[in-house]
Length: 368
Ligand code: I85
Image 1 (spheres, rainbow, N blue to C red):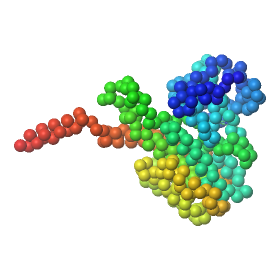
Image 2 (image 1 turned 90 degrees about the vertical axis):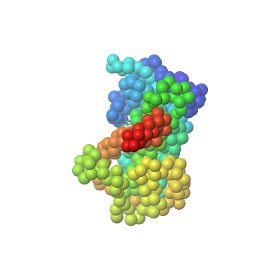
Image 3 (image 1 turned 180 degrees about the horizontal axis):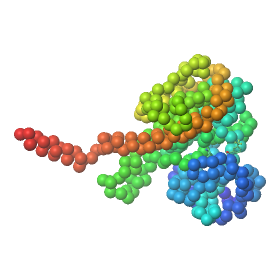
Image 4 (image 1 turned 135 degrees about the vertical axis):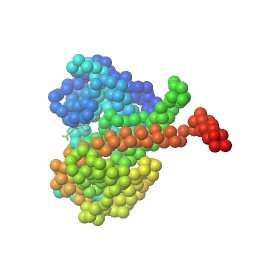
């Protein structure tokens, strides 16, 4: 059985050719049960079993459109060589209830979502040192992506899953539905456009996409340490004008009693990640070097209140997740616009300069 993972070594990682999905019916190789594991916005995830090994897998069904191709391609490349990204086992291109579909067979993450797991720790002391270890794992996943010039752009609690229910479970990142490849110079090396008409996002800069992941990491770290998010609406799940304003102004606090025992190092790292200006926000390399991550084995073993808060506020959690989803959508749009504006100002456009020079000369001529 030649699985996708066998073809990877031949293609190499990084500059691999686009993934070639298998064309045979998935039912040749897998038995799909009706059991739904999760519902994403662009596809559901169901349980399936390998006919060869009887092992359980998770199957994501996507309509075969270019966006889905990009998702699968980026996820497939990203999951090579990082144990904190959900592995893709096989990809099929099949007709599925009359539509062309991409069927992505992933390793099954049986341990469920990160924060469900933390909630269950309400009676067993979840410590700051353990939180540092969780954030370190997420940091490793993002570092791997950013080093491969991929921004995830949808880093949120529901996309962080444990491989197993027991302590041996490994935390992994999934869902590359909004992932973006950045800083690739292929279009510059072989120009297929007239430079005058090139869209700014083709030229970069790339760091705004990466900084989106850093902000998300800050929010996740904040929640992990206290059980509630740094920014939230005062009413309901939809992102309110007030919440938007607080996010834009960086208005958040470390309220007591939840934060009174949390180390200054942890707070310093959060401040670096939740900087309003993406230019001032920490990069993933700086997070890896921060002492709370680099020296995480010496982080105090203080008992955190997050597990308790998450358990007690269980009914608010849905709203918190929706807010993060909305905030991420807003940020992806805002940063795209930000890139456009920046490029307009920074552009070294000699035609524009010539015109500006001519205009100013004409202006001078008119006044004389
Ligand atoms: N296993 N965002 C929330 C799930 N194994 N899940 C989501 N996008 C994806 C679902 C909706 C993430 O790309 C998602 C994606 C991929 C998965 C995924 C991948 C691999 C799983 C949308 C489970 C699972 C399996 C057994 C038990 C349990 C969960 O979700 C639980 F512990 F919850 F009972």
